[in-house]
Every structure is written in structure tokens, then in C-alpha cells.
Image (cartoon, rainbow, N blue to C red; front, top):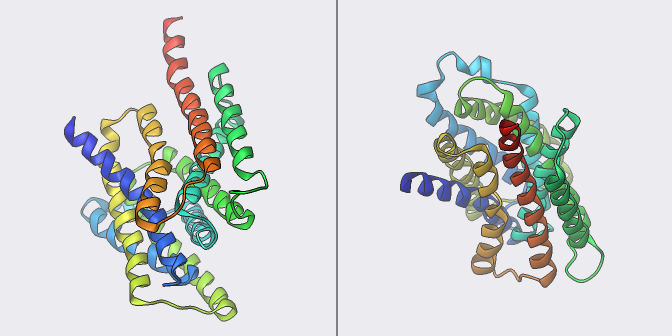
Length: 289
């Protein structure tokens, strides 16, 4: 029990750490967003393959999927650009909400029929998102919000592919990171001539930490914890990621927490929690019939 709790807590801290490291590097202009993407994906690939290599064998060719790699890049690139305009807590909340909306929407399109509890949760989450984005004091930057929503949609798509993929998840993730590097190279070749590039040693270290530690080690720890968690518990504990990111951003980055962010965060997370709860309750009810 203690091992499971420790692994889960470490993984969630790593997930929140990605937001903090990216915002810290970009807000202080330690590195440009394009270079951050490239270094993050490259360092993540190195660490993941180092960890996955003993288990890979012939799984490398089976696990390598270009669509998954494109979705991973589609998450990492707008994620970095969004943090040029958003605070760490706000960005993590938008990312998380977009991931859940994407996965829920895909489930409905695939034939899932949410129960009354889930529809209430969906309504609450949408109301929270509307309140979050409503024009006025404390509203997030629209361009940053759109970029982070795109990142969340891509990560949701990547997660959906991961649920049906065969093979070792760590090997699959390592392959996806590796195959995302050509996409990062193309972005770098196109963006740098137009917008330039800059990178201090601190910026490079922060980007590498995001890839190697928060992504590479974080995903590895999460995969170690997952077999000990139910699907519902795994989904529910991720509700803590935006909360951790927001709290850490106040302490480490000096970000302010507005009343709008607090209220809308509580509304969105409560809505997502109800939806997760509905998914857990309905199979139990069906089993009794």
C-alpha cells in the first residue's frame, strides 16, 4: 500500500512538474519554445529507451507507430507555446480539461452512453470551462488557451491509442518519443529562421529536466504504479495534477491564484469527478441485473 501510494504521488508530481518547468523556462525567457520542445522530446526519448531497452527486444518495430508519434508531438509543441501566455496552474487546468473532454467525446462517438451522473458532470465541467474563459478580469489569454486545448486534445488522442495498443507500454512510449523527433526537427527548421532561437544553460537544463525527469522517469513511475490501481482510481487521482501545479506555481513561481481560477477549477474538477464516478458505478449496477 505504501509503495503504491509513493509511486502514484511521484508520478503525479512529475506530471505537474512538466507545467512548472516549462513555464519557469519560458516566462523567464531562458529558452525559446521551439528549442524547449526539441530538447524535451530528445531527452525524454533517451531516458525512456535506456529504461525500456532491456525489455524491448523485437517489440521496437511492433510498438513504433507514426500516428502516436504525431499526436505526442501535437501535444508537446502547443503545450510549450501555450506557456508563453499562460500561468502554470491555468495551463494545467485547461490541458487536463481538454484531455478529459477529448476522451469522453471519443467514448460517446464510439457508442458509450453516459448515465445521468455523467451528464451532470459534463454539464458542470462545461459550465466551469465557460466561466474560466468568459471575458473579464482573470480570463486566460485566448491564444494560449487555444494552444493548450489543442495540446490536451492531442494528448487525449495519444492516450486513447495507448489504451488499445499491444505490447509493453514503456517500450511503446519510448518508440513514440523517438519517432516524434523528426517532427520536432521540421518545426525547428521552419520556426527558427522566422522567430529566432535562444537558450541559456539554465533553459537547456530545464528543458532536459522536463523531458528526462518529468516525462521519461515520470511515465516510467506511472507505469509501475498502474498495475496496482483500478482504472477508475487511476483516472480520479489525475484530478490532483492541476491542483498540484497551481499550488506549486504559487510557491515556486510566485503566481497569483484568482477567485475565478479557484471557483472554475473546483467546478471543472467536480464535473470530471462525477463523470469518472458514473463510469465506476454503472458496471456494478449492470452486474447486479
